[in-house]
Amino acid sequence: MMIFDDFYPHARVGLAALAQDMADHGAQRDAPIRTIFGLLGDRWSMLVLLLLAVAPFRHAELRRLLDRLSAEGRISQRVLTLKLRLLERNGLVARSVSEDVPPKVGYALTPLGAELVEEARRLLGWVQASSVQINQARAAFDRMEDV
Image (cartoon, rainbow, N blue to C red; front, side, top):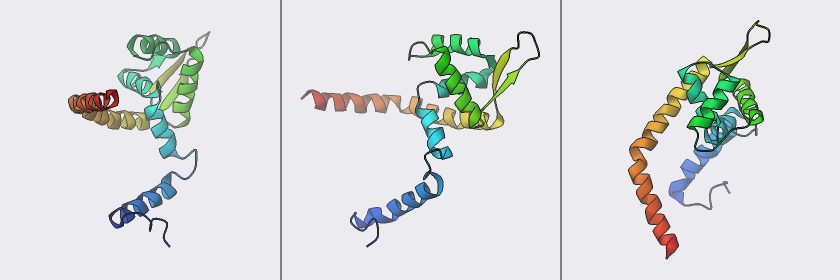
């Protein structure tokens, strides 16, 4: 028996393709597809990338900007450092250290990070274009929950 034989016939091919795709690209916990989608969905990373798409910033500047722009409240220095390190580890952000005394640490998007921001902006555009429908669906769902 195939792994998807107990599902509707029309779903088997799609399920098998999805399973193969996950085996090829997402089987490992640290697989790029899992990590990057995790970053896209977390509280701070996408906003950090969008800010760095505007210009390179230092840590303190990023923190102030995040505090002003985010609906999530304030970001701690530790959390921002962890996010920046994770973005750097995945090749999306480059960290630079000046030769000044004391040294100044700055962050900028890499070309890979710029590509991700470009794709994310397309998704953001879709969300903005679909916001009326999304809000209507939420309202309809909430009305059903209230019954």
